[in-house]
Image (tube, rainbow, N blue to C red; front, side, top):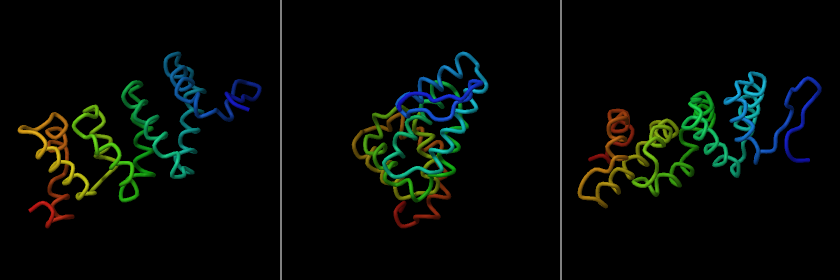
Length: 159
């Protein structure tokens, strides 16, 4: 069955992923603590057991919660579990259109990539080579990236 399945007492057991965003939004907007807690448990479970086909959905949901609902904890959970070297495919997808993505998304992508110096170096290089000036995203990336760590991780690429 789809939708929300609930036990007596209003406790959410499972939610269809197509409805998660709206249910979570209701919990936040109407300050329903049990619903917010269950949504947090639901997303934590989904993140911890995510297969490759679910990763982008989870990233989009965590980003939505960060941007629209000001709930950073979800993106932190996502980054802690799925960030680093395993995130290259997801990063590549978003960074391929780097100058056109929402600048607010650059920081979560930086978190997700960690010290993946090569992908950020390539992104900055491509952005600079495609424009006579720094885009707002390139400027933000350069201001927030740990250049020292990136240089140490990929010295040849930055020279």
